[in-house]
Length: 343
Image (cartoon, rainbow, N blue to C red; front, side, top):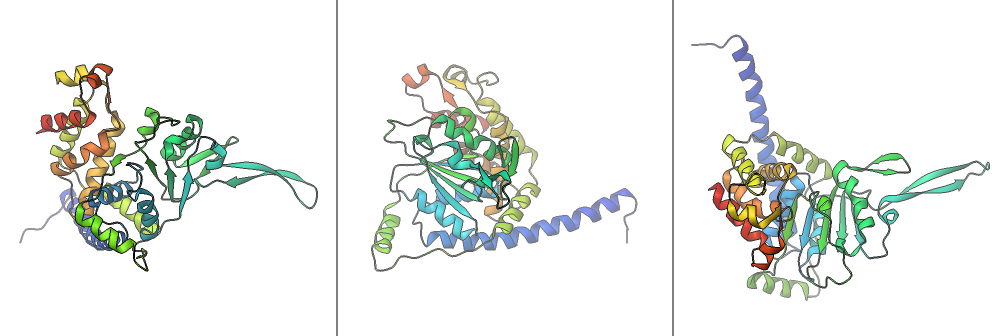
């Protein structure tokens, strides 16, 4: 019987337990995510793609922008996720008169019983694990920018002092594509902070039938916790441990770089795209592909994951020229062309 010795033996002995640990962790998480999906399904009817993309965003440790007309259960989905995943969730209704301090918090001057005066920081609603920014585009750019540091660095700076946010921290923002009067479009820097833009459409006929019956009866189903915040953090660490094949890495790089006018080999991209996805888009697509594989109980992502997640990851990171829009070109058509170029 041949035995291993030297550095090869130690490296293989180190790798094997790690692989077994990952396999067991994926199996255990797959069971918990099945419970979470079932819990969400009691309240949210249909919308399986929206639910999966939102869960993928959370597993990847990112933020999501949910866009859809009123009445599609965007707010209810966020509230349900807070309960099912065991997260401390808060909601902020964005309005034109909302100020940054209404989100982040502020320092107040207090006087103690002894007469000593000092400032005390009162935390705002951003100090939670799941923040719902409802109709985010209705607040002023100044207020919108208050979330930039929180979304990127998981901390806020108030009066020169840093305050760490709870872990995990996620922002799920909603936006209504109708009634754009009095709204403020999100700047590109903030859009890039969202890992995905999830378009919420109308439910299928059977799902809407189930919803109609379930929500107009004497009692409605309520979600129950299927996970804890600590388990979600552990799942996010597990996502980063999944191996990624070289073909998937190359597909992500090809897809992202082909969407930039400066580096694209596609004539329609060079002519029709004003600016394309940056490096953060490639990072988001890599994490999202890993999270999708984990959600489906697989040990590594495939090209199918990249193709499926390219639209929600890239659609808010591509801007078309005026001429392209006038010719009827859409961002989704550009992304479909990029996917076709990848093969």
